[in-house]
View 1 (cartoon, rainbow, N blue to C red):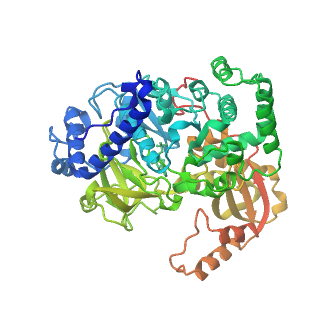
View 2 (view 1 turned 30 degrees about the vertical axis):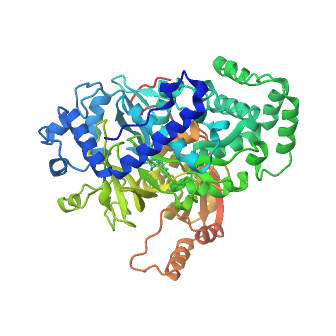
View 3 (view 1 turned 45 degrees about the vertical axis):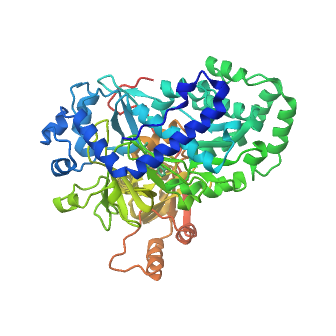
Length: 618
Ligand code: AMP
């Protein structure tokens, strides 16, 4: 198998020659990409055999009758293609403290909590210590690729808004937290040796501060103090970056006061954050005047290039549902390139974008064959893609045979991604739909098409049709005492203001609408929020990345008009079903033109870290 590129750590003590080392490391990384994509099938074969031989004694593989075999044919014959629900009993055993080799022969080091949910709670993805190396490897490929298109990035800093989230413990004592929280808290990130490519304006202490207000404030303050050094800015997802700019809009005068005085205001109480920021913050009235002048101009158009004038691009994911934020980012940055560098998940990190300056609509990710064993399920009308089931139906034998290997996918075809990981997921359906856009050597490059079944998303929340239906049904029950009922509904993710919020359009049947107090509809909004999954509620309560849910009551007959519109656009009357989510602007305009009244959720829903049934750590 091609050797992984050595990261700078091995050369940490010879900083003098860092220029030469960067060139050497960049070349190694590019050669690695060249090698593994050229030998993609061979690498995949070895990855599978390595995973299966290491975990030959895992109960799951034995139960399915693999009998120590490590070849593809036997693997595909005996191991089922599964989704999270199939693995739930095994995952619960691990969460409850069973340390026997159930899924993987290596000890499960922690659970990574996915933004995908099961029964309203985050899915728990088992992981092992060595996966951190694999994640670091993927990260180490990003800048060598970027450097081919934007040279000189080693001469300045990156202003990245990075955050950790709360963590919990399973009843068996394993930590459960999001993958990025796990990564930022690991020595791989915290103790990274000097590397001009991971030289960020945010000190580690500000990233590792669990209080999101203090973390954001401190990271912005440090970013502003070093504004001339910043060559690239970013966050993981577009929504997070926009949240930072909104925070600046609210707090710039306080930030300027701190820059003028060289002191941090008293709301920042975390001692380690204060200490780290004070190493960077020096009284600078000229800079404070400049920021004040820019921020008080009234328009925030181009604010990024105005305050950070040497910025060359914005590094954020704008593929998938995040594409809704592209116009806002263009506005704030005067059209700087938007760069999507990687495609990853809690299950496994998948791949990177080898052409990072391409348009967002053309982004494709090359799956790196060493990360996991990949298979692909063709989705031509595949059941479960557009159906209303939140979990994919199990596959019959014929469908199982349709799964193809990494190098056998066809250009232009859509597939659902299926992974086998070193940490104990075997033929696991990730739930993402990808389209083959091209090839790098023998490794396919994929456009990210969508996450199956997801109808609403503002930040990392992913609400599917079944959850929405269940939440709306719970809420609509509150109309019954008023002799009213819900006739039809649809929904919309409104991101025209930040934070974005869910909007539900309700058409109700009622004898006398004036008899229903506004508080009843507000309670309906709240009940919907209480019924949605924990990732949504966390976004509302903890991250404040989602605004209060809104119900808009529309005139009677509105949904008939919606159907007329769909038919006029070519829909078949026999097949027409009310869409449970709308995105098309003329339809939203039609709905908005018939709104009689609107109501917002009056308070935040309940949310605590960890699964409902566990006692949380924080
Ligand atoms: P999580 O399990 O919470 O880490 O979420 C992983 C999911 O986020 C993936 O399965 C995708 O649905 C989505 N995702 C990750 N990276 C990207 C990307 N570059 N573009 C679009 N969606 C992404």
